[in-house]
Image 1: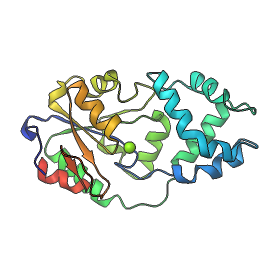
Image 2: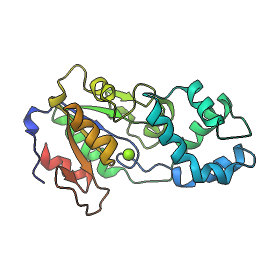
Image 3: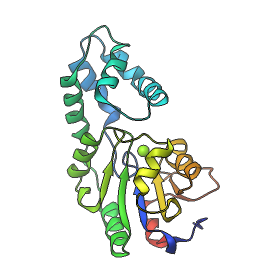
Length: 216
Ligand SMILES: [Mg+2]
């Protein structure tokens, strides 16, 4: 658990949301697509990840209008704002989950006078709802979603670190390319969260969120 940065110099800890702070309900999104987009349920279930990745490769932030147009390129049934609002509501219907360890850890970090910030790639509105739902929202000073800037683009890490220096911040997330390499390439420290699994990754990593209490 040796980290390649000096924990005493860290002023802000920045967390990814999905699969880092909480478990999203994306795995049962098919229910939502089938109900909301006639005849496209199966298609969207299969392709949504590809569609989102393509969007994130082209654009630097999520914008509702641009995203709806992007999505409609793939659909013969056209979706609009009401679809997005329903989707956001569905996102917030999380499965029950135990966030005790996460809360204890966030409380500990706060006591250590560290600022806590969230940097997620999905729209801010549903992400805030999810944090509320699991009782985590009050721990965070700032909540930045993909409608600010997308990870791994530099602008997202610069925004999340402001007004501190990049090297005074650490990003924690479960995605190597987006969270970890994105942060490191920008000049920020990073910790890879392996979701309890053993992973072949030679740099900073934790298996359990509680390990942060030993680092800071
Ligand atoms: Mg994640």
